[in-house]
Length: 130
Ligand SMILES: [Zn+2]
Image 1 (cartoon, helix red, strand yellow):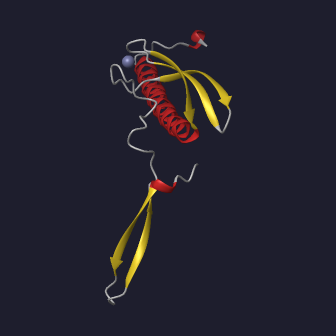
Image 2: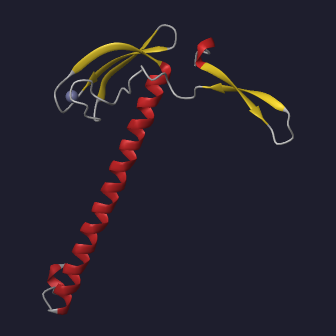
Image 3: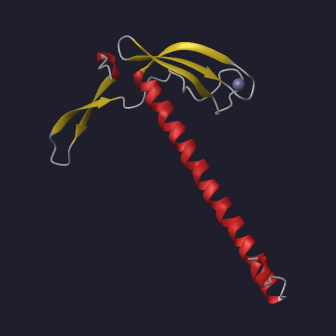
C-alpha cells in the first residue's frame, strides 16, 4: 500500500504520569472518497461483481464490474487496496453462500430422514425397494 504522507495525523496524548507523547495515527481504511467496489454507484446495490480482472501497471488492477441489479457496468483501473477490499467482501459473500448451502443440505437431509423413518414405520419401505 502507498504510504501517502497525508494519510496519517498526529495526536498528543497526556499519560497519567503527566508525560505527554505524540501518537501517529495512520488511516487503516481507504480514503472516504474511495468508494467500495461492491456497491453500485447507480442503485446502491451491494452485489456488484467483477466480470473480468487483469493486472495493470503499478500494482493496480483493471476490473470490469457489473451490477446484477441495474446492469451498471464499468471498466476501470483500481488501487490494490480497493481490490483487496472487494476480495474480502467477495469471500464473505462466498462463505455466507456456503453456510446457506450447508444449512439447506442439512434441512433437506433431515426431511428425507423424516420421510424415510415415517415410511419405515408404516411399512411402506419393502425389501424389494433396495
Ligand atoms: Zn446497480
